[in-house]
Length: 242
Ligand code: Z5A
Image 1 (cartoon, protein in one colour):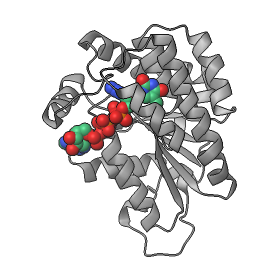
Image 2: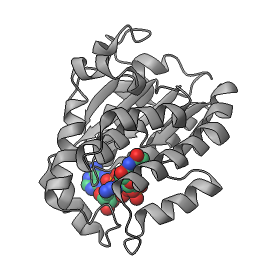
Image 3: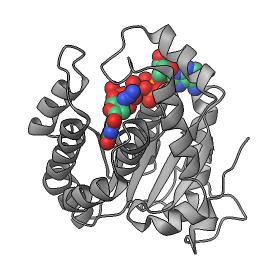
Image 4: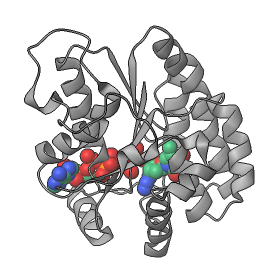
């Protein structure tokens, strides 16, 4: 399984990425948790360049650098981990490129899809969990955190375009037109981290099925009674709140 966590900045995605990895490990799964950009020695150098506020980049160079980091991560980490049966949990993936470089920067989607088909080697996520939070609330979380990187310093209109693109990705029509992104499931990111974690696990339950090892199983890992044993179609992850 390749599980991706997505969302605009300030939604608490990285907090959930850590907690989700731990919850799945506690349930006996081998979890490889990586973040984009980065996750490899080369990718971490690319990440430093991409986030450096003192290194201006053209939109095209930025898109190619994100794709370069992804190409390295897919081949060096993700493919080998999937081949041995591990669950790979990625903090951001292809959908971020579509939202930030496509909607945010205004680069042509056809070009982004083309370079990223090379970067991902055709690998589509099993499921993308999209954390949602009203923009002002997300911005308040970021402001409370302090220092902003190059992307976070973009103007409010840029972040609004990104947020709109993420919302658009939740529509069945958008997902049908972008099969390389796989199913995208919304999770309400409001509330304490442990509540958000429970929502993430509930949304993933149809894919996770039974844990590979016998109990102890966290109550959070219990699939809801109504959850199908496997995802039949994208509608299986209709947005769930509360
Ligand atoms: N990017 C791109 O443009 N194109 C691409 O293809 C890819 C990425 C892959 C990566 O930066 C940047 O690259 C990102 C998109 C772009 N830029 N932006 N802007 P990053 O990895 O450094 O940052 P990030 O991905 O945006 O996430 P983050 O900084 O980790 O923020 P976050 O996802 O919101 O996570 P957080 O650190 O867990 O939470 C933010 C704050 O809220 C923090 O102080 C937490 O303590 C707090 N928090 C977390 N959860 C809660 C709850 N539940 N309640 C209250 N407060 C909370």
